[in-house]
Image (tube, rainbow, N blue to C red; front, top):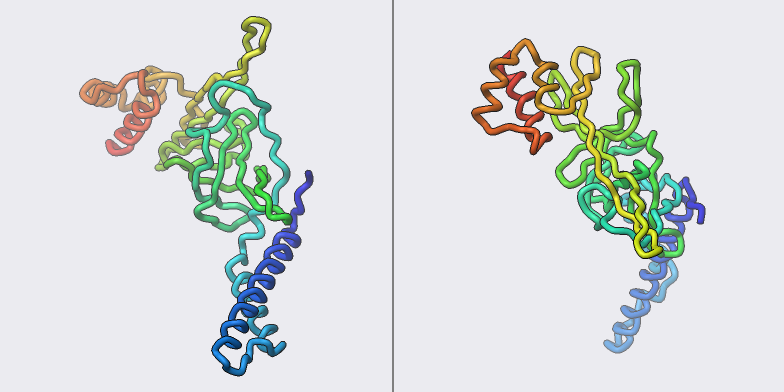
Length: 259
């Protein structure tokens, strides 16, 4: 199925439904008025037209700016069955915020497919059915999901690959994490079982350079001018490679507090 990218049919479909709802309401009010033995004004065509136009105008004001969010294409999910799920943080739709095509949209139901590196939203098509839309990655500036902000890194001469990165720390330096899930297939009793292997790669952006981080030793090396103080801080706070994200964020934040 191909989705209409300019939002025309989306607007037309819901305008039609609004007009239908207004006419139904008008009919009900008209019946009530007749039962009350009062002269019904709701049958007047001018009144009906005005009420319909007003409802559609209110809808258009509410929708203004939302149409850009429907600018996507059909999402092709990974075929089931499989163990686990391919998405970031949750197998269910989660509400989040997106800056897309220069506009910010709140309370959007979304999933971030880590296997295909695609942001997917839930959307009603022109027939009123729920569909899954894959947004154009180049139009996404950032999105917030499950307490994490993902920024769109375009890729540059510093060596970092283009894609969505979890912005773990945003200061003079930036600490980024690239979350991925890899398809893993095994054969059991003649049946192929599919699961997902989760990977996370960490990067420190400092002075226009990208430094790949693997463990505590590598981040202490990257911040070697305060290595002694950072090692003491890590020891005092029990920071280790068992929780890389917490350890790296804490060390980078403490480093900047020392300067």
